[in-house]
Length: 279
Image (cartoon, rainbow, N blue to C red):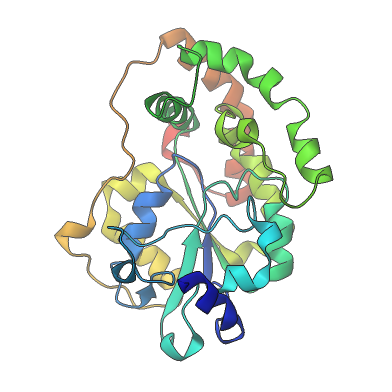
């Protein structure tokens, strides 16, 4: 009923002021909910207080998995313009960065949106992604190394099928078993930069966000055209944390070698270093 009401009033609901596009297991959930502590950042509609749920909705997954539901469905998730004076609202769907059609769709449908991106050491991100799938009993392979070895076969042809398929086509393997590939940040970011100008991007390092959430959120607030605001102590929470486990040194080294050219390209795109590339 609430979604139907939102769709019937979609014409009164502007789209997002910002998109938090990833990366998966990179800190996007922690960043999104921390940003909601800013007095001028609004949650999606409906507010969690109207639903039997503890937290506000973070992501809509429209430009990746739900594009066939249409623009009215998408806009039904945003507050009406009458409630948004002086405030901003956005959504965070971490698969957007990796999905082959999300950037083009967003560039066409919400060209004025600002783009937020939080990136984590790609080795740690890949391992965390695998552990998450295992915790949820959604990954049958018992070791990270086996999952990495199976990745190429699992992903073979999936991007092409997404691009060529119907709007509602989804690929579990592409979204959830792309442990290595989702950390190859540079080409995914370049794809987004074909549809949004560079000044429309704010890219954070997850390690720096967790080390100093206030400074990171002040940076984002300024980027969104807001005045920085102090975060309450309760705002600093790490979401979706995975239990610490050892990663085999040989696997870490192999991944470091794999990611080295992607990290170099990422730094060239953005003109900055990242914590995981420093000596």
